[in-house]
Picture 1 (tube, helix red, strand yellow):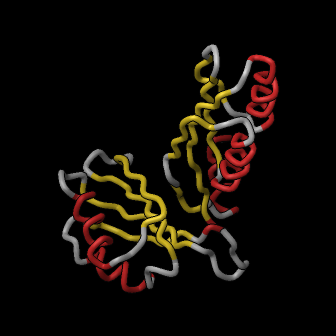
Picture 2: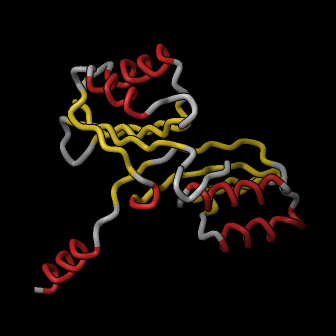
Amino acid sequence: MSTTPSQPAHHILSVLVQNRPGVLARVAGLFARRGYNIFSLAVAPTEDPNQSRITIVVDVESAPLEQVVKQLFKLVDVVKISELDPRRSVERELLMATVRVPAEERGQVVELVNIFEGKILAVGFEAITVSLEGSPDKLDDFEELLRGYGIVELQRTGRVALPKLDKEARLRAVKGKAS
């Protein structure tokens, strides 16, 4: 994926919705009907159990942002929509992979997991299951290196993202805790 500093390859939308049955299906259906490509989708309840946050990463080529936002706001369960600029947001993703690795090479995979600050989840006679949490770029790099060993199964969660706190807000938060 190539990006230029001024134009990311994807739009990241944080959509706050009412936590009701069928909301995710309506959102996904809207994207399907319009032919918009969803690169990644993650949904979970927020700090308010009556609301969920859907983080949608949309392909820039398939989806004019203004049109996507207008269409989303037509859905009755949508409360708020924010576009998150990758330069001003914190993004995380989880990767889990089972790698076929002979016993004599297992130490190399364990060292790779340690370098990337991942975790070993399960060890079998011929394979090892690992996990890594981090930025999408970090996971891309890790996945590429694991491919050399032979990935049996791989699953990524998709991105979750929140806006970065501005420096003044962080300083106020730190000062508030210190008092």
